[in-house]
Image (cartoon, rainbow, N blue to C red; front, side, top):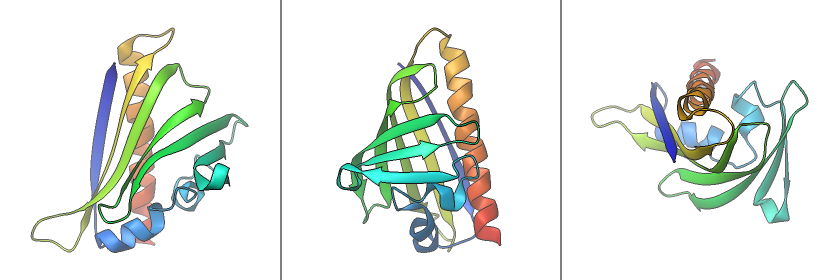
Length: 138
């Protein structure tokens, strides 16, 4: 199983960051790659669309408002991976009022090398966290 993780420090309080990203349906609020999200199954399934028209269906696996984190799996996506599980978490930075946001994932490559699928998800996470930082800087 492959794994990647990345984090970014943001000049906003953890509470401010979590307010923006903590909702399972909030990706369109901060991630330009995902212009729409629709919830189903009592808010546990999100149906995402990307600009290319691809459909991505994800399931909320765990949600911890106190720890400011949630994990989710992919049920359907155009990615060359299976057994995908990701965690998005906001934490305090010691001695600072800022926040550290960490996005990590575990997955099994399908039809590509471990390096290729790891690079794909790592790129998505890095670009996503940079977009988050820009959203909060406005």
